[in-house]
Image (cartoon, rainbow, N blue to C red):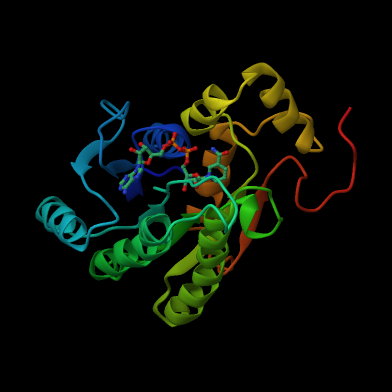
Length: 249
Ligand SMILES: NC(=O)c1ccc[n+]([C@@H]2O[C@H](COP(=O)([O-])OP(=O)(O)OC[C@H]3O[C@@H](n4cnc5c(N)ncnc54)[C@H](O)[C@@H]3O)[C@@H](O)[C@H]2O)c1
């Protein structure tokens, strides 16, 4: 992949997990990276933190005002910040529906809209959304989360169509279960975390969890300005979970 020297990127949710790995990947390749997150997390020395809650229109507007005071052009936007919800539709509350859809779906649209004036100044802008295997596969106890990621996948294609004539590409990655603090928090809630981790590993034909670095590498590929013909694409990074019917060993 091309070097990223001279490119500027925004990664939402860059304080942890997939967002942090993406910021590290971009920064190591020479990009200037801004991390928009409610927490600085572990991004110090990797990305410039701008406090931002993607679920809040006011917070996003303030973050992009700060960003616009520091840069003239944005080449890459990674809409990665997201939250989960556990349960079936019977368990889901109206408040949970509103919160998860607001952060995961409207947050992606909101941040992209705020970024467009800066993206339009780039000669080869790219947007990458972190979607999920939950968009394409029925997973138990993930009703709200799955609905939100299905919407992110559809939104990816719709935005790709809307902006193709402006040279702005929009793609998404669909990770399987990834070894991040998010999943560690879920495992901590299980009665037997070790057995639960084994079950998650065996759910993927590869027999292992996806690493955050693997997802970051896929995001890097989709963000690469040289990939001018790749837009509206959904790139699975899931150990074969979506496309294969191979029992894990
Ligand atoms: N871990 C997985 O198994 C997995 C699988 C598929 C997709 N994903 C997706 O990957 C993305 C990142 O997940 P992760 O596993 O790295 O999680 P993580 O919890 O390790 O990191 C998420 C980051 O997002 C930030 N964040 C949360 N809400 C925010 C908000 N409203 N505004 C700004 N920042 C916010 C958090 O502070 C944190 O730094 C999410 O969109 C998630 O849905 C994760």
